[in-house]
Image (cartoon, rainbow, N blue to C red; front, side):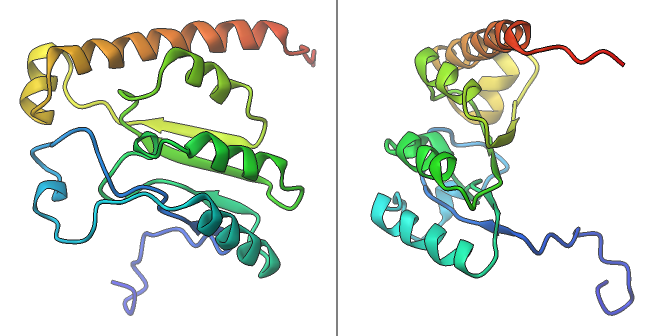
Length: 169
């Protein structure tokens, strides 16, 4: 497709993708996670900081932190990494995908306060408990945690929005 000029992958030359975690808490039926032979691991804070430092020196200003076959919140040190990005004056922004069934409510509140976090895309599998469990091979407990996390996020964003100054046009 590329040679025919039909490539549909947007060119984003200032975004560097860094996979901080290759582990996941779900076993989705469509995902190769269970069959992968590469290590299931988490990047050290030192390596992450070194990668970001080198990347900004090369001109990168934005970072994608979505794992290929994992979830960002499986990295127990993810907030230290996010804070490193937040505190780096050369970093403009970052974003990631997550299944959102892992973070705790206080972690969700911390996410809302990150000013360089441009977006979080939440992957939701199924439309109810039964379909979630069937697709993810997970449990009702994980489903309930996901729903609770979505409610916490919704409430937190509503509160956050109220505190923001309104611009009238």
